[in-house]
Image (tube, rainbow, N blue to C red; front, side, top):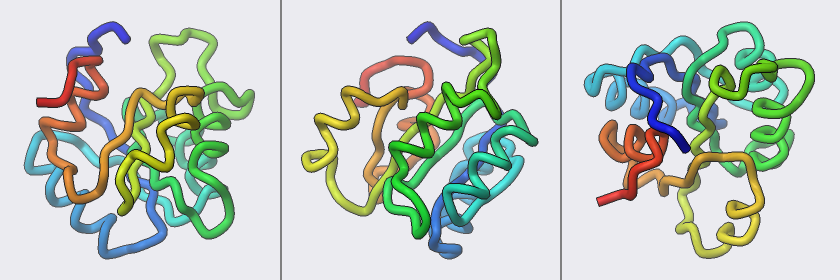
Length: 135
C-alpha cells in the first residue's frame, strides 16, 4: 500500500467498551483523532459511512457479524466505499488472539493488516496503515 501521510482520523470498533476506551486514550496520545466508536458490525458500517475515517481499527469477533465481512462492507461495499481507492479507509483488524488462526482469511481480506490487541500502539498502527513492516 502506498504511504498515506497525515493519517489522523480513526474509528474504533469493538464490542468491549473497556478496550475502546483504552484504545482511544492510547491512540489519541499518539496523535490520532478518534472520530467515533462502534460496538457491533452494523453500527461500524453506518459510522464509517457517516464519519469517513481514514483508519478503522476493527475487532474480528463482533456480536452481530464477523469482522472480515464488516471490513469488506466498509472498504468495498456500495454504502460507504469511495469511488477513489485512495479515499477508502485503511482497515486494521484486531483480536485478543494471535494472528495464526486468521492468517489465510487475512491474506484474502481487504484489510491492510492485523494487530493483536496486546500489541496495539500508535506506532504499530501507523506502520500497518503506511504499508511499513512492524518492527
